Image (cartoon, rainbow, N blue to C red; front, side):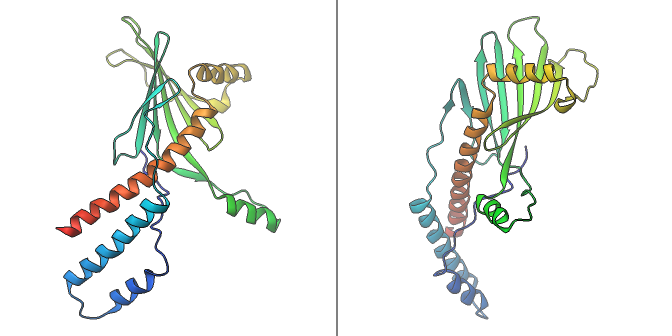
Length: 225
């Protein structure tokens, strides 16, 4: 899956930065002293993030969906049962952002910079009927923005083992208006909608904090050896 392209920065305070620079600039420093200083700085960052920006416990459910999340992975999976259908949603962590809108007004540019970029999450939605003899699968590629869900491509597929001709899917923007409306209603009935997009953005921001702390603690454990 796509990598998380906007990690939370290491929140180095000004009090620690000069010490780090002067230490690295000191000639002839021993590797052991370097590790000790790096370990001290790392522990300061872990304590700072843990005290002031701690991640919340990640939820295991959202509406009808159960959430499968494994530490260290850059994506999550949601599963739901809708009547006689199985709905599966694979969602990446943040994998891009929309460019800031051009504007000649200084106030508009400042406002856009303060709000920050609109981060993007990719979704693969798969709806498949349960039971024998049901080999059709509908796969939908979507973009999740902070406040909306956009459909991009539709893929009618077959289950593994069933013959199917290669097909690259239909672009959503090229569909008729009535078909577009049907697809949106179809997904909304299965709770794949704007509310899910908003939840995923909150979830991934929180997951990003948890992954950053996890990574720093792994580095800490390596330096301690």
